[in-house]
Image (cartoon, one colour):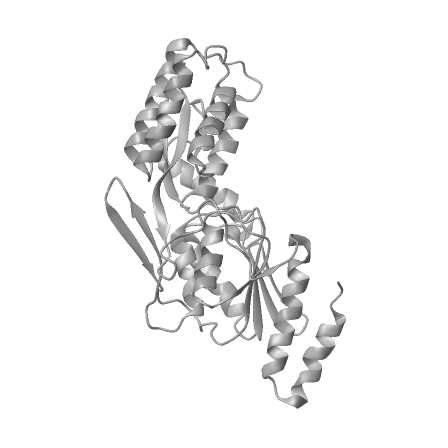
Length: 341
């Protein structure tokens, strides 16, 4: 789940840097990349048996000359990604080519600065906040940045929405990011007693990181209807927030089954300008003792992504209206009547 957004931005930046240039790989360079990939995969991928199976497949193709006719870096990266995923079935696993240039942001600090500039253009991943008709809050989240950079904006959004009667969190097309911010945002929907919402187990370290709810700024959003919008492009940390709140019965999910990427990971350099994002950890939900890897998170209410917001808005108003005194129900009934299909 971690760094999915940053990895995507790095790919876009580095792709732009060599676009239009002709780069040809030698046989030796290809062998070095493939051998290093196999080494990194076996050393770090969360499931050793799967890594070994995928590596065996790549070695067999290499021995048969399956890569002899490929000398373009982007094509090799794409082919290796596809072949690995055929065995591993892990959508986080990804290779790309990133030639080093003098103007490329190669240091961790420069990469982080580039990442934050991209994030700020979308208000740090929270591009839209609104109060819909009938006093229903709406929060759009496109990605989860580092909590030390985005936490304050997240708190500001939740404080703005604190007086709404119901909340809709829009995670459609959310491609993930940092589990720490998922942990922080999820904490707004629990009382002050710490609750375990997710764990990440790492094979190489034989270590489990637990994610418990934490103190947050402003008032909590408890005992009010919460709806989360999802679609098949909701991925990684976006899926985690939906899965965490669904399993804890804190939110109703509306939309389509998500993409199915639950494994955490990191970027590894393969040499000769190649990099790979390799999943190194797996999520373990404390309620289900499993996760959504390969299956996606299923909605409570299945509708098309285009109808998800309208459906959730209607459901929110009906849920609020049921709890209100008779004299206040006309306000919500009027809002419900005004919602256009």
